[in-house]
Length: 107
Image (cartoon, rainbow, N blue to C red; front, side, top):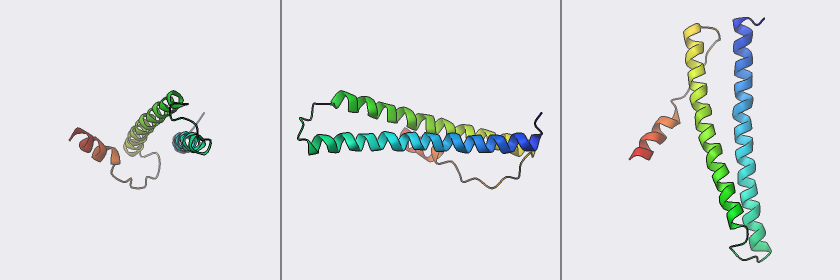
């Protein structure tokens, strides 16, 4: 059985791994997109070749960005739980950039 301290440490560790995995996937998606574009240029292939694949890749990137935003929100909620329970020594968190983004997006 886990103690509250052990549970908090495991959650923090797993959350960091999850956030890193999202960014690793996003970096891989961006790298693939760059490789596809450069390969088309270098091989003098018509622009239409591979366009649908590139569109799907960009859509996958948008999905990753949405998942990243949800991960940030989950992190913020878990931080609130830790604050309420006083289970874990907390370091101050920066104000969420998502709030600024959502305001800018609504404008």
